[in-house]
Length: 445
Image 1: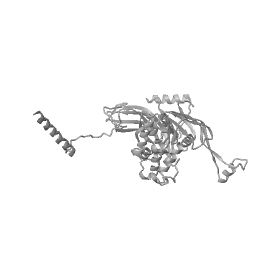
Image 2: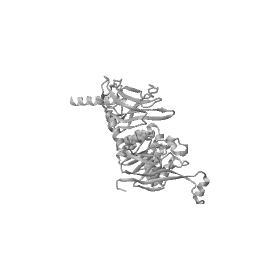
Image 3: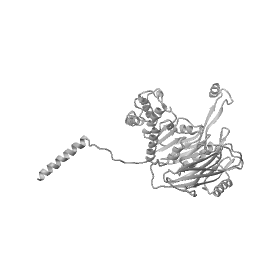
Image 4: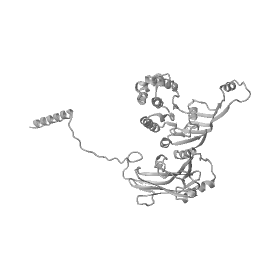
């Protein structure tokens, strides 16, 4: 393992034996039959990756893709069937609710239990105790058995322990999703502090905005296999294709070039990510300003319109026209569609063409943004993607006043004089000041 590598996962496989009956497990354990009495489930299939010191790496994928399994193997909770895992550094792990806690113990007893398991002495845990209690902020409940805790209280204590034991590597598995919004904000501030301190963070989350914001690199798993790794933007886009069953790792050079040629003809970004069933296609997308002029530069506060033209290649029962806006890091900021807006809920005949326009006022902060488009719908109860264009247009928002965050709340600010009465202390200070001035004059006289 290289000096800069703190986690190394090499060709890891995890296979579970599935027995049709409890008796079959017993038979297999004692090798009472010469033939196999179980099926196999491959939770991980030849997974390899490394995590370097100081990186924040995210793992994403659908349920059952192996995300939690690989974290448990890295932390030693599970053992791999084959392959090799090496960790260089003290790990603090926050896995699924309940992992590492004794439900019969009080919160206080679990603090000492977890600290001891990691290798701290009682004196060292004593020194960290106040920080843990302040961060968890669960009051007298810390003296109650954790089996009486709500999920929110549980994760507060678990995270407080995990981040206050000075880990070199922090591993988090989706646990923050059960905390309230204020606690989540508190935790993510800790993430920022850890990143600045050069700590390593590995975490699983379905919150793609958090993955995009915090991760230097993202690993995409699906059905136990690693589909790819790269920037948050690349992997999130690939994950969205997985969700609708249209992800393809490989394609011919001719297919790739054909896709590039197609988007260039449309006047789009040549690196647009494009996929769909092809039953309907997006034929043109563009933006106009408040005077109807084509543009990619919009003045903050001005009205603008997003245009999207489509053509039905087959009968479309109830097509949905959609667009969204991301920042350059890939975080999806806002967007809408005709279903949300309750506009055009009809069908389209083969060969029919339609244009959807979305008009709104620009309230985003000044900067560069990317527009994505989608033509989707339902066929019976199944959601279908007919055509998607990710990051197909760039827009620049021009602003002479930016506020905090993604968008401007357009606050109306007013500062007024209010009636003011000197406090007793201020009156006494004023009296003493007057006396000093009189003394000075008398002395001069």
